[in-house]
Amino acid sequence: MGGATSFCRCNAEVIPVTLPRAEKPASDQVIAYVDGSYRSDTGEFSYGMVILKDGEEHTFCEKMTDKELALMHNVAGEIKGSEAAMQYAVDHNIPEITIYHDYEGIAKWCTGAWKATKPGTIAYQAFYREAVKKVKVHFVKVKGHSNDKYNDMADQLAKKALGIL
View (cartoon, rainbow, N blue to C red):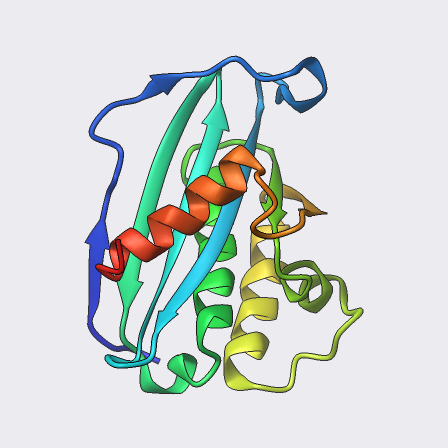
């Protein structure tokens, strides 16, 4: 699919965090919050991602320009954020990841509950199928714009990557 990509690594510092007991990942697992955004005047989309690992939060965001994927607007960013979370786990030899997301398709295309029919969703499903050969992936749907600290942070990071903030 190609396209120009600019990467914005938004974690100039790693911030220690204290999570409630139920949200604390096992030492060999990470929690990721992902969100996407779209800018109609430029046709660009982005993702924001917050990784919670070993009591620290790591933030990432990336802006992308791909005409075909951009037809999916912010969903393209949601997909790329989920892929980035899975890739993070693979790259860091982490055997298990839980991805928190606010767009239900993020899980449903992977599980097969929704049929992948567009090139972007087909590629996403294929990415997931390869990733789960190396990483156990869990999905948790959260309500968007509901004062969920890390989901809101991922949303802000996605907007930051597009220069919306």
